[in-house]
Structures are given as structure tokens and as C-alpha cells.
Length: 100
Image (cartoon, rainbow, N blue to C red):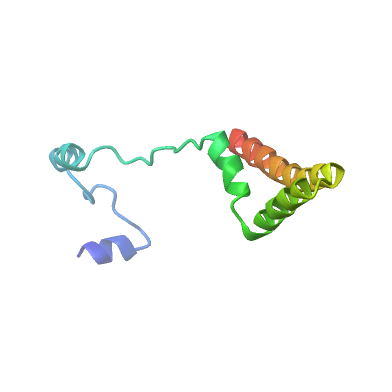
């Protein structure tokens, strides 16, 4: 009967389909409100997550090796190559989150 009511092109709105007020209140008390909590990400965690990948690891190793052998200028170049894309990605993510 209910399936026929839902499938019919001319649905009779005088018939009750769904929960009664008492059932709705009982479900509200039992399960709580129907919402998804918004999770805010920490900006520092978001930034550090960009450095936790194989390519940044290789660049970090290169920076350390350059510092060990005394090539400070090249270490600065590799640091720029590592930091700039990560910072741009974080900025893009922050702008996306703010747009929501």
C-alpha cells in the first residue's frame, strides 16, 4: 500500500506518510539532531601534512646534505623549492575553506 502511494503520479497528500510527532520526538531523543559537525583543521597540521610525502623528504635530505658539505646557497635554493609550493597549497586550501 505504501509503495503504491509513493509510486503513484497523483499522490494523495491527505494520507500520512512518515513519522508521527511522537515518533519524531522519540527519534530525536534517541538519536539526537541530524547534522554533521564541521571539523576545523589546524593550519599548522595542514602545513606539516604537505611536507610528509616522498618528494619533500628527498628535498629535505638534499637540504641537510647541502648544509653538511657547506653549500649554504644551494641549501637556500632547495629550501625555497620545498617551501614555496607547500605554502601555496596551504594558502589555496585556506581560501577554499573560507569560501565554504
